Structures are given as structure tokens and as C-alpha cells.
Image (tube, rainbow, N blue to C red; front, top):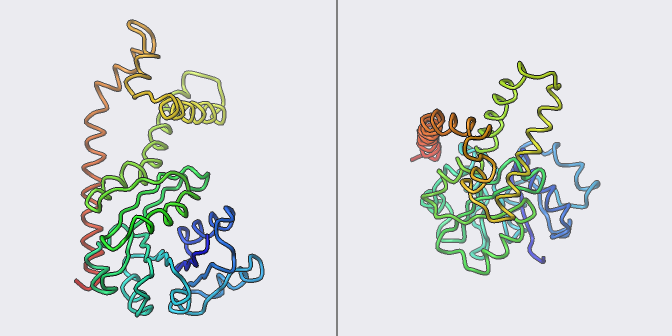
Length: 274
């Protein structure tokens, strides 16, 4: 890929994107430009990896075609103002789902802007990365960005107004799943002498296997339940409990998280000076 890429903000997200890009060999190191508020955090990367480390955000942005902005909501507006004017051909990628296109466009104007939300599973190349685009992003631009995002895992395009719920389903979900399986682990312990470490291994591998079964065999959740929970059998006793008791818990999870997301979005709007 010939595109030159800037990554502004070398926190957990910026670092992850940088490391995945480097590992994939999709982009040559000399075509990557890094900028970070604490310059000392990135200085060694020039010698270690052969990338460009920039003392200012503007320097990074002015050299790049694709600019990843990996910052907290309260820092984004000032940085976007700092890097102005950007080329009309530049493609800005915001890794913050709370800031809306309308807000970004007030600072940047009508240029190509996308929003991206990766998940923690990108660490094992299994991110379900959400992406949405404003009207300036062409199909060619989308394809180029998707090639980059595929270094993290799968890519799912959604309209901007669905990114919130999409985040609950993929970005928050590893936490929800881990919390649920942690409770299953704790509930199993009194009934067995199997070690905690072995229980975790068994549950984790079963979770991965079930996911692969659904994805690779095109099975629905109901198909898996029907396959395992035979009528009158042991598994059915457990699935009955889940089906009877869990629906209000699941409903409350989304009610609480979406309410929190609304508050977070409102704060982001305020931090943007609106």
C-alpha cells in the first residue's frame, strides 16, 4: 500500500493500530508518521522501527494521506484545529464514537471523515471493528481503509446512528461475556475439585469453539441450543433457567449502557464547545 499514514495519539488505541500495521507489512515503516503529546514516548520508535516520529500533530498530518486521530473527546477539537488546513484529499479517521460527523465537519469542513471503533480482541487479530463514513468518503476510500482495519480483524460498516448499539454488541461485549463466564466459573467451583485455572481454560476454549461453530457452520444460537439441549436432557435443564431468568438481566444491561452512552455523548458535545 502506497498510502502515507499518520497516527496522532499513542495511547492504547494508537499503539495497537501502529503495531498491527507494522506487523502486517501492509505499509512501509517510512510511510508511517507518529505524533504524541508526550514526544519522549515515541522517540525510540524511529530507530527501533524506522518510522517517522513528529514533534507536532501538524507535522504528522501534513505528511499523510490517512490520519488516525486516537484521542479523548476533550482533546480532539484542539488537535483538529492545530492540524488545519488539511488537504482536501486527506482522510480523517476518528477513533472516538461520541463525536458526531456534524461536529467534526464544523472544524474540518467537507472532507473525508470516518469513525472507527475497534474491540479489545484486536490483540489477537479478531476485532469486530465498526466503521462509518461521511458522504465525502468514496468507495475507493472505503476499500483502502478496510484493508488497514483488516489488520485488526473483521470490519463491519454501520450508519452513524447505529454505532452506539453496535459498540454495545462488539466493543463492550468482551467485557460482558467475561463477566458472565466469571460468574459461571464461580458457580461451578463448589461442585468440583477441578482447579480454577482448568475451569477457566475449559470455559474459554468452549466459548471459542462455540463461536467458531456458529460462524463457520452458519448455525444460529437456536441451532446450537437444539443440537446440545435434547428434550428432557441435562443441558435443557440449564438452558431453561437461562431462558426464564436471563431476559430481564440482558434488557437491563443494554438499558444501563445505552443510558451511560447518551451521557458520555452529551459530555463529548460539551467538550467540543457546543
